[in-house]
Amino acid sequence: MSVLVIAELDSHGIKAATRSAIRAASQLGEEVHLLVTGNDVAGIASEATKIEGLSKVLHADGPAYAHGLAENLTPLLVQLAANYSALIAAATSFGKNVLPRAAALLDVAMVSEVIQIINATTFVRPMYAGNINATVVAPAGLRILTIRPTVFEAVAATGGAAALETLTATGETGQTTWVSRDLVELDRPELATARVVISGGRSLGSAEGFKATLTPLADVLGAAIGATRAAVDAGMAPNDSQVGQTGTVVAPELYMAFGVSGAAQHVGGIKDSKVIVAVNIDADAPIFQVADYGLVADLFTVIPELEAALKA
Ligand code: FAD
Image 1 (cartoon, rainbow, N blue to C red):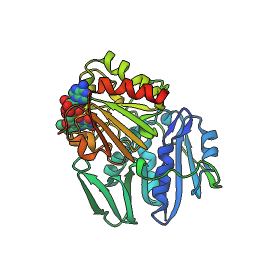
Image 2: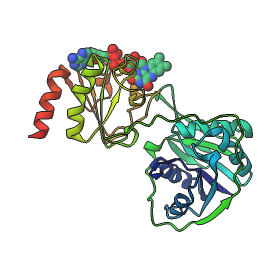
Image 3: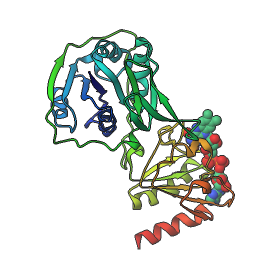
Image 4: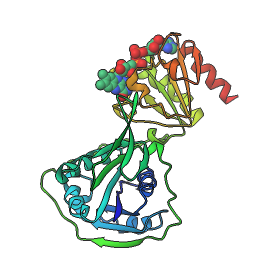
């Protein structure tokens, strides 16, 4: 038997999170195959054969797969599942949309957000906003996993030589209709994979204040900008900038939290950061319990000083 990783594509090709899922899959001790689906993606499938650690790339093409709709992709996964011991994807919005659906149809208890693979059936996953790491054993038979991409290093995009097999597309299910996509064009690193993330909380005061205060520092550091849910709910920052349990989980080299109280739901999404720096006027703020470096100070004073010092 082999393990099947479900590829997630964007306009540049296969996302790095998928290569993290391949790393995780390779730890199950079996051959790893990659499923590439999309509309007119033969070039991407062919390029995928070079990814490190794969023995086969399966390519299914057609308009039904154009937008990664879980409703159209799931019948293909259900069909392929009989040949595999495990289905794996990164725990991104895509993976979290597709695999639970396949698990329900296949009557498998899936294991989500895996952060460590102990052996082929035993996995560690966070619970209660990351306050507890549970070790779980999947029942015998097919395993369906999402893995947290920030904890598995992506395999190299080149160096491999996998076989390429073309599959017959399963087509439209008619359950969902694609309407449109609002794409946010990022002129800075993507939050989930950025090396440096700076985040602001509700204390930034307004959307204008949030942008004007954090953007110049982010520019100097080449950082992605994150926000607390309180800042997002108050309309200060866009939804996709939310960091935490119900937002994006980040694990940058450097995470800087400005005016962030450090609620468990926020901290659950930043714990794997290598270095956490917190600036808060309240010396008792919970963020200081997880910070490697803490500064009790007003962020509106600290940020311009830091920016000037970095520029100098
Ligand atoms: P506050 O808690 O209001 O804290 C503001 C902080 O700013 C305070 O510590 C204050 O001392 C400090 N401050 C004020 N002025 C200054 C200044 N001038 N300089 C420096 N510091 C200053 N939250 C998330 O972030 N992500 C999530 O994914 C998330 N998921 C949630 C899921 C659920 C089910 C629930 C119930 C909540 C969730 N939350 C999440 C919300 C979370 O509980 C907190 O309410 C939120 O994180 C608080 O945001 P905050 O730190 O901006 O605001």
